[in-house]
Length: 352
Figure (cartoon, rainbow, N blue to C red):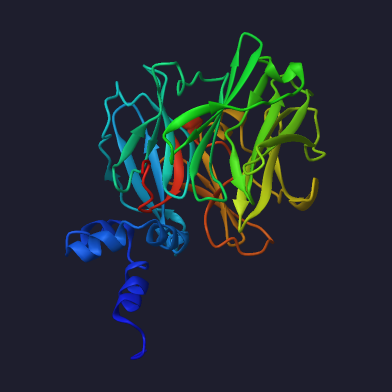
């Protein structure tokens, strides 16, 4: 250790600090400020921040926006802290569309504007432009946040307008939008199909595209973030005799899907993607019946062999599951209708 340069030792120590402590450390001296502002430092610090103890739950309601830790020893919510939005809003009309490495892509519902926001550092960046880029329409558009091979954070915006599809990419590096080609089946442009938010995994953004009608068509659209090519793969072979919801999660850079099916009572299976094919990991264990209304109002997490059914404020019950440790917490169902997110506290900036 005595042979290591002081700069290297300091770098190694600081990359292990909590994100808020890194922010405070910038005021120590000019050298530390410069060091902690480099992209290399931010990237390494981010990679070391993806642990369960650093995960937070952000919840938005009509009156407050709060952040809560998830207590690892009992897997319940910890004490909340109130978050003040750093941007103008009306009655907390903020929807969370996508998140990655501590950044949230959100929409201001009264103006339809898209923003990148880091709730830990409070920094944000407006993505809207005078030529009508960066405006989001709920139930028609889809958003995916990703990092390309050059470590440029980007936003993929899929827009459906009167049967016409437009696909646009925002680059944090150059701070601008551009159009890219995307040819898909005409029926997917219909409002009868619901597009999920994009899930970034292994250099690809994945979207579920599900027909709103019972027994309808369900597919997965894949976007290679480096070649910027799209392709379609099949949905897992789940029963189609009820509503179908597929929630995609990135677990250790392997794509998984929690596929819930049913009508008045829902069941769930866990699948993993190998190549272009889905392999079932497990079927839903016996659980207390969950009504559709409650299913749509709660958040489910999976971690370390347990499935936690959560309300906004507390845990309802725990289901033991036979699976490999996940180490972090992953959502099993849509998170409170765009009003919540499980995110990691980082110092990643929404702008350069």
